[in-house]
Image (cartoon, rainbow, N blue to C red; front, top):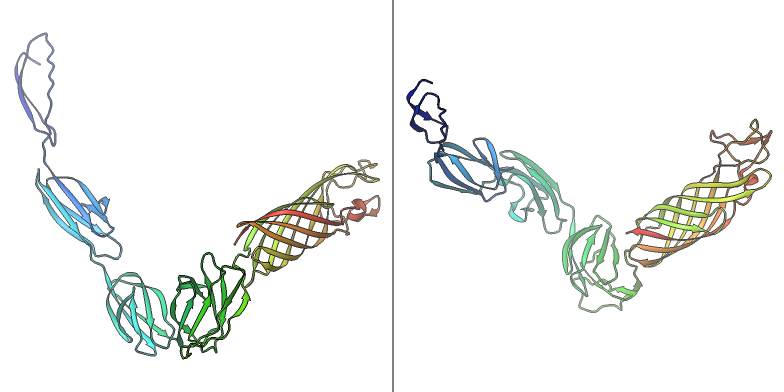
Length: 452
């Protein structure tokens, strides 16, 4: 630059501009340093939604339910949005150094439902609120998933979840089933009552009982025996009382109708087992003879009383053999599938009869007195049948000790990996000939880890 005095101006958006003079002298370097001061052109804004929602400013999401920040002065658009609610929109003019607050509770979107029933005159409840009787157009129902209940004296209550669409009308038609009012009580109140495997409340309890169905009742309370009962579809009972007992014997009091004068028959005692029968589990065990070694299985039980079962098990044993065919250690992996029948004795003991079929493999065979040209295969297998009885005793809430008597019959052909019967020097051999002690009886002891 030429020598002389100059005027300089520094400008930056959102900062105050700075003007000053400086002199340039020949041979000298001019260094200039200036601090610009920020223009405060912001206003503060606090937004809060009573409803769980998303907050947008100028179409950009800035938070959920609450937002506290600053905006540059000028016009801005605030939106608060939530599913099944009407969107709140507001234009706001921000002035620097001013505070703004928006608190808003969103308004539900609504729809209309048409409710009819056969017979007519049933009460309509939406999320527990009475809305009139059928037939009726129910207006201003909040959009989204709602619970509807249709109730009429002498008929079973119908409940279900429905989805109400905004600004639309949907029709629902219900055919009610004949029922009667039934009162269930227990000597110790607060017991859970299950009707056809659905929890319906705690005792004392009155509810509509569908007369067209064979109804199953289960009553549970911690520290007491579980009670099972059935009410046939031709039963006319209106009231029934159950006596909960902590001991191994419990009883149901006889039926007591609403017209009874208070005279009760002598209670009938019956043994009640706790609902602690195994659903499925995993076990590990050891066997005393050949085939023996270790064994593991997974299994599941089913049926009304968990009396039927299926299982898949596998085992392993290694034995040393020295005979005219084999000399050395042989590995015996095996697996089987089968079914069982369970007889539950008490709430902690079970007897089980089981049967299955499977395969046992003999691997790593060291054949004796054979050359390379007629050497039998390294691995063979056979099919076998497994029969047995098992007794189990619960030792903790999720563990059982068990003992079994097992019969294994493997007296069949020996097969190679391709399923062909093993032939040695023109002679076909059975598995029992090669391993004469693999078909025997044995005792099994183990532990089961169970889930109820």
